[in-house]
Amino acid sequence: MTESSAGIIIGCDHAAFGLKETIKKYLTETENIRVQDAGAHSEASVDYPDFGIKVAKAVSKKEFQKGILICGTGIGMSMVANRYPGVRAALCNDLFAAAMSRKHNNANILVMGGRVIGDVLALEIVRTWLSTPFEGGRHQKRLDKFDTIGCIA
Ligand code: RB5
Image 1 (cartoon, rainbow, N blue to C red):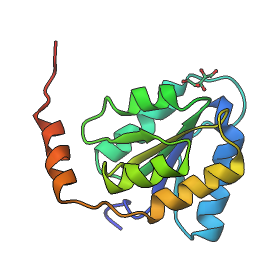
Image 2 (spheres, helix red, strand yellow):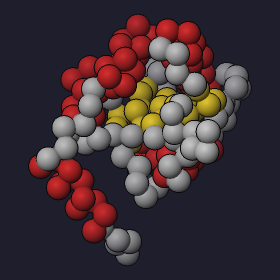
Image 3 (tube, protein in one colour):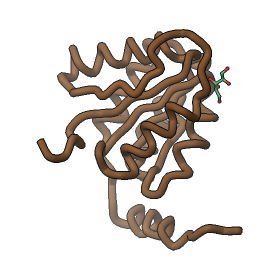
């Protein structure tokens, strides 16, 4: 495969290591999706930007069409990921946001807070996010305007 965009790249920090392992298992064993694990690989304290950068960079470079990032709240990972061109990272700690982030925003990175939601809800959010298509149309016109935003200094 020249392009690995068929799979999903996932990353976390120490606060969401356990949830990352749970999601990885669900994606590979239940959904039969290839998962690229960008770390972290334990509960030892790390800096979330290091892992957010890895995932966001891969999605920005179109090495993967979709990514998942999780930290304690999901806030830090969202902030990091949305600095990358072409990345539309959505912090979704509920099912409505997960569905809408796909339908209206064509989100390409799902972000969740491992200290905010439980594993069962997180898996349901992942399932919803992956199975909900982008509606295009007027929403694409709005997303196109993102690309008119340059560096505002
Ligand atoms: C780590 O303690 C925590 O700050 C991090 O997981 C995340 O919530 C940052 O936004």
